[in-house]
Image 1: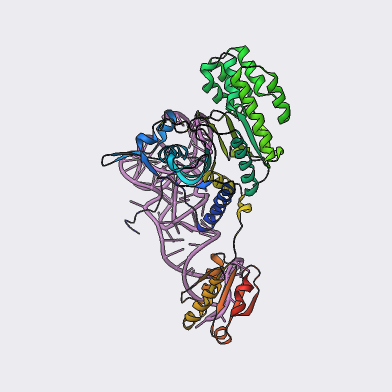
Image 2: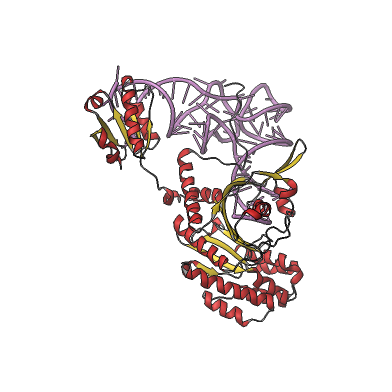
Amino acid sequence: MADKTTPRILQGFCELLPQDQLLFDSLTDKINETYKKYGFFSIDTPVLEFSEVLLAKAGGETEKQIYRFNHYDNDLSMRFDLTVPLARYVAQHSQDLVFPFKRSQNSKVFRGERPQKGRFREFYQCDADVIGSESLDICYDAEMTSLIFDVMKTLDLGDFVIRINNRKILSGFFGYLGLSNKITEILRVIDKLEKMGLDKVKAELKEVGADDKQISDILDFVSISGSNSDKIKALKKIDAGELYSLGVEELDTVVTMAVQLGTDEKNLKIDLSIARGLDYYTGTVYETNLIGHENFGSVCSGGRYDNLTGYYSDKVMPGVGISIGTTRLFSLLKENDMLGSLTKKEKSAVVLPMDNDRYAYAAKVVSEVRKAGIRCDVFWSDKSGKAKFKYASRIEADFALAVGETEETNNTVTVKNLGTGEQEEVALEKVAEYLR
RNA sequence: GUGGAUAUAGCGCAGGUGGUUAGCGCGUCAGGUUGUGGCCCUGAAGGCCCUCGGUUCAAGUCCGAGUAUCCACCCCA
């Protein structure tokens, strides 16, 4: 073993064994199918973009995390999310797209940050966004809410809550308190309320520069309680300017409409402390948590942004979108032994030729089974009978189809159910039917 | 970027106060059973004990540095 290269991969990069990959694919399939049902069109964009394009807007944290390098004369960057490439895509192809444009995308993104539990440097995001031309009705925000609801129902990961808020409400209210120049910082602090607790938030708000009266107003505000309609009523009583009122109006519409679209109100909760760290959200914001697994963080987040393509085009294009970090979600589910709901697996079989003269007959058998649309494999190896059945068992096939001299003579197959251990000789033309 | 932990077989781990041949479980391969997997039994293969340096008659074990990985913070999916 001297001088061999150690097989290894980069930290924060992830790959799965075949049985896990099967489950991961089932996770993304379920999400994509739901997106499709809502009328989204799937696209893909390049992993690499010109740095000037990708970094047109980025700054601060994101910029530091981008994998960027030169190749000959090109300054290149790897996409760190799917939204910026979408903006470029829409600006570049706007004349060929139909608006409102509903696109979904399931692709890998790259972030050069320190990996840890549930955080990767290369990971899949499963996004759905609607982009409008000039304007985009608030009903789309409601539709996204309903989409989150449907996805979560389909994934069947247990009880969940979609927490919803509107940035206009927060910005309007904080502006009204005379804190309009500190809105971004305040939003970030408020967003941490659940995690850090009241005292720390108070201290941080003070650091940001709010006085005691402002702090208590803010905290009273975000802790407005009751049902969704109670909260809306309470919010409507407060007079905090035009932006604020518009936000309340929007939130009211989104919640009402989402319910009409099929969202169960039990799973939808107005939460005035949700702000989302990302600064490009301007209206509705979403976070989704699994009840009992709050430590997972948000499994599906998103929101409304006013002008997606501002850095690439003069056209105003508002949008609303959501994102599911499937790599993270999968790794957390696996760690918590929650992959059970993903095991939807089709039946599969493997043909075992019992001796070397049986290959031709094995070919006939496998072709018959495949014609019926059943996943089927042949073990073309001259090993012991034990090894053959062991192979069938290891690949987790449901059936082993043993074919030897007797079977060929009788034009049959010995079907062994690897789950129950029972076996039976079945006529070749009946095999496919027998396997179902 | 800041703080903490870990590094021994393909994987998961054990190896009091230094002592000569480094173990266990899983996996792999072979056999018990050459047409029957999972369970059981037997056997085999597989180790520069992360790297470099230091202390010592003697280092997997002690000390230092480096590297890598993991965890937490920041931020986020």
